[in-house]
Image 1 (cartoon, rainbow, N blue to C red):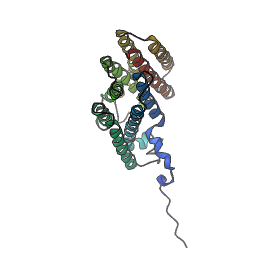
Image 2: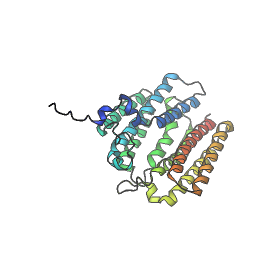
Image 3: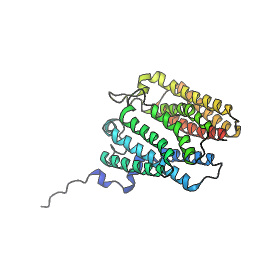
Image 4: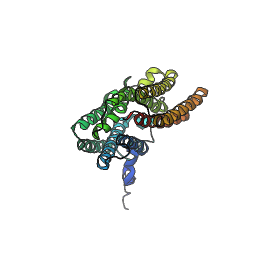
Length: 292
């Protein structure tokens, strides 16, 4: 009687494109669109396509590398808290995710290096921030810091890569820090209960849920105020700033109203994506309003 064949590993039955789930395609597209949008603004609507393409590809590789590294590091926790993610659901192994992160990180660094040594240094700080978040800061009260630093450095990196840097871009630090904090708080809030375990808690758990939700709203308000205030210091171009500021304010008031009535995971998820859209839209509008 023939021996019964052993069942194949779930990983072998997955399609070849399964790794795409690991790099968060929607978030990746939004990030790349923002970086390319910055390049268009910097170049007055007529960008150098060779440079713009490298900017987009380098940033895409960086975001994908950070996502893969994050999932590889979180694999033990995700087996119980986030079963739908690629590694615990069997789409890819943690070792494969780590190898993918290393390859994409090297590709991102090489592409950034082709833009010049100063943009490469700025890019390296962003890459270091991603590494520090995953390996050291993710489960601390400083977990928001890499996000804020990345938001602040992105326009500076893009403009320097295109040789369009202007002193007005130093405003990117207060604006970017506020925007990064608002993005981080809104993005992490839906995972509050799943991450409320020993060794997994971040700044949201330090705040507690009663204060974390209002803190996200306060960060968004601060982002709006700083963006508008910094634009007014210069010869403001209202046609750039007013529409995204109005959209951001409307979306913020909408989610605040819904969550004031009742806080649920579904509503926190809606807040996550609406806030992400508002933060990125306002960043584009703010940059367009202050660019000489």
